[in-house]
Length: 71
Image (cartoon, rainbow, N blue to C red):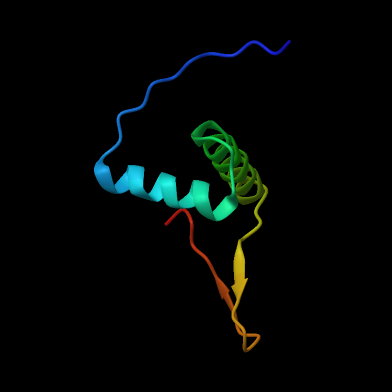
């Protein structure tokens, strides 16, 4: 059994709407699942950034643009 800790969040209306939208778009079963996935992604991006790597996006035409996460 994994030990868990309960966390209560207070979100602005817009933040709650965004959380709800992400839950629907990703077909997550709970807000906790959305938050866990977001934390994994954020942690990974930070680790890659710390290793000197940069996140780039490619548009449908093939043009690549660096996405500046930490300006």
